[in-house]
Image (cartoon, rainbow, N blue to C red; front, side, top):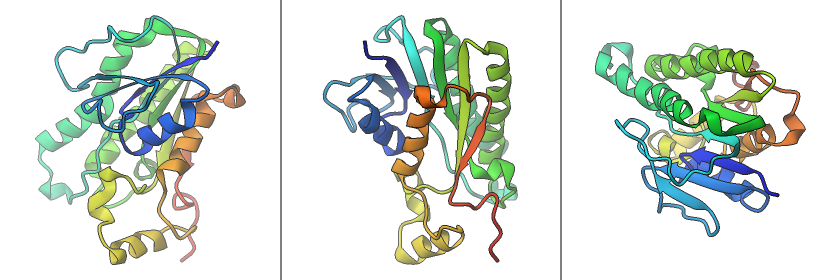
Length: 230
């Protein structure tokens, strides 16, 4: 019997790539604010706004083997230009939305289920103009470690911390060749990430091949977080 994976934010970018990777071997259910976008045959999708007051999970089965939370933001501005409301919005989407969803679905996880969240390389490596997103994603890292400890060995919880990935979310940062080359040159491997780079790691963490891994934050970042090549 196929295992069931629930992906929040599976209609574009990394989430959509992950759906394409998994749909042959797993029962995939996705939820997003644009459930028709990137629709896949055989994949159940429904509307979900993680920042909303009420969320309807009636289309979700009572038994889940994996969960991935993809919603995120890239809000890169100097601290002096960021209002407290901007910090609150980034925290709502990146972190509080995750908490709200988990509060509703935790009883559905089967023993051995794998949960995968997303952070950013900027949490572990201080980067200018990243104060808001690093704060929100930093909350996810601390939360994931504590959750992994609390629910071991019943559940595994891991986090992927990418550098810049070529997704619709990053379009503004990669919208011409000069920007693309500049961003590529910042990384030791001399390119920005692709959705497939990150989705492959998520698929690994959802699989039994990672069954002895929990509480980890894994950098998939072209080497930028650990290598200084001048």
